[in-house]
Amino acid sequence: MMEEKYEKKAIYHEKQRLQFCLLHALNNLLQDKDSFTRAYLDAIANKLIVIDPNKESWTLLSVIFKPHHNTLTGNYDVNVLIAALEGKGKKVVWHDRRTAASSIDLGQSDETLMGIVLNVPVRKYGGLWKGRHWIALRRIEGVWYDLDSDLAAPKPFQREEEVKAFLDDVIGQGGEVLIVLHGEQ
Image (cartoon, rainbow, N blue to C red; front, side, top):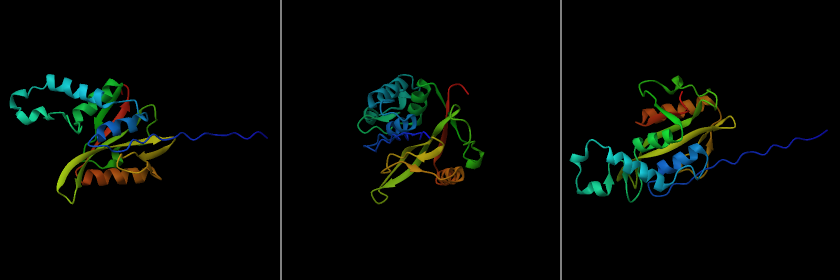
C-alpha cells in the first residue's frame, strides 16, 4: 500500500515594523512578502494626494503627515488599502458596523472571499499614544488565521463561530471590518 505524503503549506507572516501595519497586513493577506512594498504604497499615497480635492486646507505639517500616509513611519489610510487591493484585482466591501459579524458569509468559496482586513483602535505606551492598527484575517487550507503583524506567529481559529466572535469584539471596540473579495463580485 502506497502512503501519500502531504506537504503543509507554510503560512507567510510579516512582523510589525514602525507603523507599516498596512504593508504587513496586505502582504499577510496575499501570503507573499513581495506583493506590496513601501515604495509601491508610497506611490499610491502620493497619487491620491495629487487628486485630493482638499489640498487648500494643508499646513506645513502636511509635508510629513500627508493626508494618506506619514512619510517617515508609514501609517497608511484606508484609501491606500483600497487602491492597492483594487490594483491587484480585488474588491473591498465595508461591513456595516450596525450588524453583527454573523451576517458575514465566512463560508464563501476561496475563489470568492479572499479574506478580511481590520482597522482597530490601539493604545500604547501606557495609554499615552492612541492610534489605529491594520490586521489581516485569512482562511488557509480551510482554517481561518489571525495574521496580525503584532503577534509572534499566526493564530488559528478553531471554528467560524470563533472568527465571528472575534469580529464582533472588534466592532464593539470601534474597529472597522473590510471584506476582501476576488475580482469583480
